[in-house]
Every structure is written in structure tokens, then in C-alpha cells.
Figure 1 (tube, helix red, strand yellow):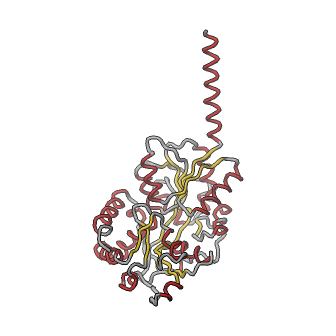
Figure 2: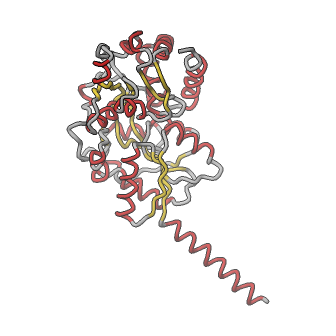
Figure 3: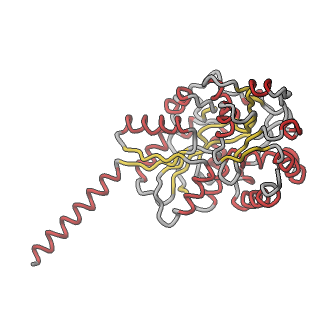
Length: 341
């Protein structure tokens, strides 16, 4: 009887060990960039390492909400991409792990500052400026003037012609909300958002969806990061990208290791690889035109030149904080989204 017991115990131990070894060869990735880029990252990492990647693509806000929901039993290992504000909030709330990659010295200062602001619980992987794009064919068909400024988008002639994402689910749209508050002051910023609301035909879940809809002729104007508008132009759609004349905010797309991850070694291996020039330089091959955080990464000629764009001094630490983000989203829900259109 005792020998049967020990044989059973040994078999159980072997099975557990086998499961652990299998897990070491797998990685669960939450990706908050464009689907094509996420698929490229998954495939390339699998080919390079032999590690199987289970990738889920969601917007930044959705991914942050998932991390919170899974905090007691984390299912993901790495959160890659999406605007930095929710990454900072996740760091503040203890949902992500501190880690300093040996490749960090290869990064631009803005990427390292993002890491330092989060106690090294996140790091910048790309950057891009907020703006909008319009379908030039629809604009001409409807005899509409070319919008050049944020103020233009509140004009009555654009009623029903504009899409943006919902800031509760989209990091892009939250950046828009925080940008207006910083650019105009909170009262005037919310007045602007209320006026803009009258011209919005749909709040989408994903931040890049509005410009994809504009490319397909489903709306005239999409408020997005400028690189997302450039992607549509590069794909052959009649989209014109605009850097608003008043100035604009920008994102630092980030990456974080999820606290309590089941595959920490594979997660760190992915993290280190995702900061290399070789990995980041491949983004342009799938028409993702963000500015890479690795100083040596290849950059497409189509990537918007941030030095030519009037950027505000975006306060990532303040607007990425849990309290401020919750407060602004609650105010938008109460004062803007409930208004008639």
C-alpha cells in the first residue's frame, strides 16, 4: 500500500513538474496596439525563441480593466503597448512588477522618464502625437472646409461628421480628454468637449477605429493619434493627417510586466527583446508609424516628426494617476456623454 502511495505521489510530482516546464515555454501577452502589429510581435517572438505566445488584442482601457479584474488570479504575463496613462495607473495600484531591463540604456530619455515616473514598473516603447484625420473625398463631396485646428471641429457644419473613441475604454480618447484639460484649462476644456459632443456621430471602443471608419467613408473625421491616420493613408485610403494648430498632447506607449505572472522568465525575455532596435524597427513593415523608443531602431519616413509638431508639456505623472484619471472620466461621463446630440 505504501509503495502504491509513493508511486502515486511521484507520478503527481512528475505531472506537476511537466506542467511547470510546459508553462516555461509559453507566454500570455496582452497587446494594446494595432492588430497587425500585435500579430507581427507574437509571430516574430515565437520564431525567435520557440516560446508559444497566447496573444489577446484589446484597447488600453480594456486591458487595464482586465488586469484589475484578474488581480487575485493573474492570467497575463506582459502588457505591451497602448497609451502610458493606464500603465502608470496600474503601476500605482500594484498591478505590475518593477523591472529594469539590461537594454534600457538604448532608449530615448522620454522612455526612461516614463519608467522612472512609475518606479520602474513600466517603460516607454514608442511615442506619437494626438491629432485627427479626415477623408478628403467626403470633405469635397459635402463641400466642407478643411479642418486645421481643434476649434474647427466644433463648428456646426461638422455635425454628425466626427468620430472619436470613448475615454473609458480607449487610451487614445483619454489622452484627448487630458489634452484638452491641459491645453485649455479644465473648465474651458470641458466646454470644448461638450461642444465637440454635438458633432460626434459615434464613440468607438478602440482608439484607432474612428480613422479606419473615415478611411472606409463611414465618417468624415476621426480623432486619433496621427500615426494611425498616416497608416490609413499608407494603405491607400484618402486620409489627410492634421496636427492641430493650437498644439496637442502625445502618448508614450508603454510595456509592463504583470504582477503575479505565471511565466515570469518568459515575460522578462519578451520585455528585453521588445526594447531592442531590431524588434522596434519592424513596426514599419506592418504600417505602424509610431516613433520607436530605441534610439537605434529604424524609423519610417512616414512617421510623424514630433519636432515639427506643437506639443504641450503633457503631465504624464498627474494624468496617469489613479485618482485624477478616475475623476476626469467620471466628470466626462456625467457632464459630456449624457448630453443630447
